[in-house]
Length: 259
Ligand SMILES: *[C@@H]1O[C@H](CO)[C@@H](O)[C@H](O)[C@H]1NC(C)=O
Ligand SMILES: *[C@@H]1O[C@H](CO)[C@@H](O)[C@H](O)[C@H]1NC(C)=O
Ligand SMILES: *[C@@H]1O[C@H](CO)[C@@H](O)[C@H](O)[C@H]1NC(C)=O
Ligand SMILES: *[C@@H]1O[C@H](CO)[C@@H](O)[C@H](O)[C@H]1NC(C)=O
Ligand SMILES: *[C@@H]1O[C@H](CO)[C@@H](O)[C@H](O)[C@H]1NC(C)=O
Ligand SMILES: *[C@@H]1O[C@H](CO)[C@@H](O)[C@H](O)[C@H]1NC(C)=O
Image (cartoon, rainbow, N blue to C red; front, side, top):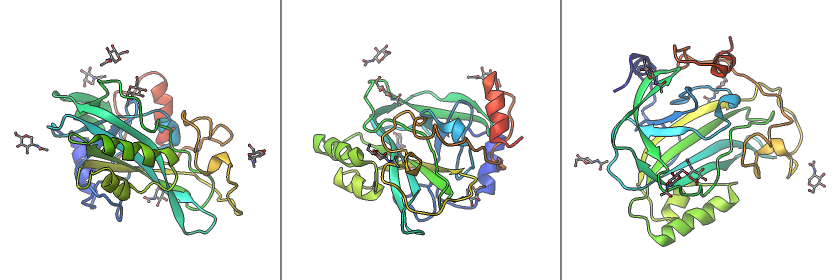
């Protein structure tokens, strides 16, 4: 199921959880997150330019539920009281259905066969995706965490609780939100990746509407970062050039790998 490259990557990862240490709700089941041939899995470092549009997501094992939701949360939003940080919801999509057949994903981390989560019912995102855009503030490295939640039996009230919690985006606490929605214990897979601003970190306070702070209010993921220089970061062992890069992806790949 898993390619040799990915197997090596996974073997080299000592953490049991696929979600970051200390994060709740934790999951030790792989959530495959793929952006146009890049699969930043299990803490891999990735350039923000790769992650500007919503990824495809999937699982290595076939899921039985009828309905799933994905959430992506930045756990490392700077505040005016460092090292205190805040959280920010980047994406919440409900109404996803698991494919009954695996799709081969050709990625820079190897070939992955995943059962993709599909938006067959064309459900509008509860919180539309916007991409990572860490500002030049402490902490420079942000952990973008994705969890997949089984919403098969979710009530109407549960759906309303998700929508209410997603409206603010800032200060999003996944465990509390899932409890409010009656979805405790329903996380079935997780992942996180690391996008780092190369700095140097600016001093001073966060202006409430400074775009670099969080990206709140942008749905494209590009508006907020338009004034910031795109900062490529060095690749990790998990990111290797594959034979599948095509066209413009080659350039992006070289940037992501620091080549
Ligand atoms: C899915 O169904 C199979 C067979 O019916 C069962 O063994 C498995 O535990 C189920 N998986 C989940 C996640 O419920
Ligand atoms: C992935 O690569 C295989 C060959 O390794 C090829 O047959 C397949 O068409 C590729 N899939 C995509 C979506 O590019
Ligand atoms: C979802 O959108 C696609 C593409 O626009 C369309 O072909 C399909 O019929 C839609 N499905 C539903 C359930 O509305
Ligand atoms: C699902 O479909 C809706 C309506 O077309 C769209 O707004 C949303 O972005 C889609 N989400 C995903 C994950 O494809
Ligand atoms: C994220 O990546 C940066 C750059 O490689 C590294 O300095 C930092 O320690 C990483 N942070 C986490 C939480 O993994
Ligand atoms: C903050 O927003 C207000 C009103 O939209 C605007 O007048 C002000 O210039 C903005 N400040 C910064 C630093 O962007």
